[in-house]
Image (cartoon, rainbow, N blue to C red; front, side, top):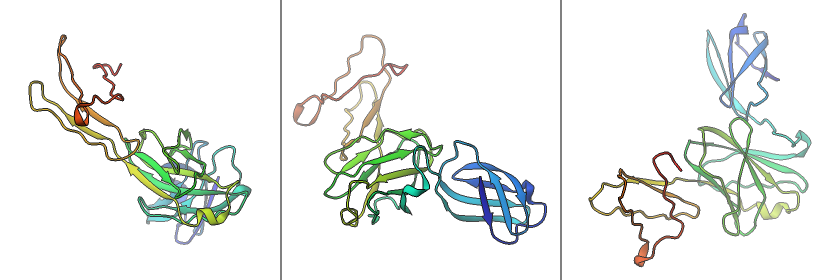
Length: 231
């Protein structure tokens, strides 16, 4: 349940369109200065917007905690810009919340210089996503299944505030995709980011042979071939 205060909502705003992080809420109380609405259980964090017959306005971010976190645990909140270091001075025993917008097919990486900080990732519907470590000081998601606002929970329970003061950086890792033409020129693909994947699509018939060669003539051991059904 969420209560919004403002002015100029206008009478009869029960039909107002209230959206939080891309999820529509059901208005149950409306006055000129107050809108009260119910959010679905799977609503995620993000900016709030209100649209009535008199106009539309965009409000601040709303942080909706996924289980098992409680408001008492929250030490700091922020919205981050991609590839910009965001200082996160989280009190000992608390958590930090970060919001970031991302697109379907991208991967999110969180880097904390010099220290491995436990982070958890939640999609726009507050469902948890795997966030394994990449290297000594970073964690990275898999390919995102939807576009929207994602919530990153930074657990500083066992980390002093000074360690995080240098900032966390959220970057987007995009997979490299290209196409090959049978009997055409070889396709060259370069992967420059840790955790980055490359995909080459091509048409083939039964009996064809596919060759993947890495730099200096070495076959890349991580290559996987999928059939037209993705198997």
